[in-house]
Image (tube, rainbow, N blue to C red; front, side, top):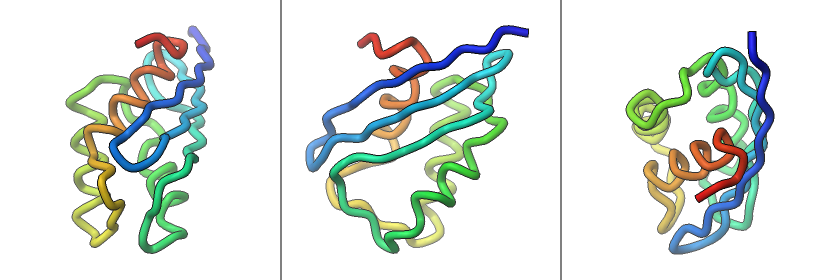
Length: 97
């Protein structure tokens, strides 16, 4: 069992996404999301973190979960699901581009 911790910042068109995460066997076991973007409703960020726990670290897996999260009516002006996925993948790679 390999535990990896990572951190990354990703500049989206309207804000920076900050991701701190811990993975175990290529699955997210802990994640903290933040940054200087707008999200409506404001408390939705915690819901996204919860949805990502247990998800395998891979572009398609993450994108499916984030798109499902957005289907609930969450809005983040000029920050798209793909931006979240890129930030998470960078953190999983230890902050590399």
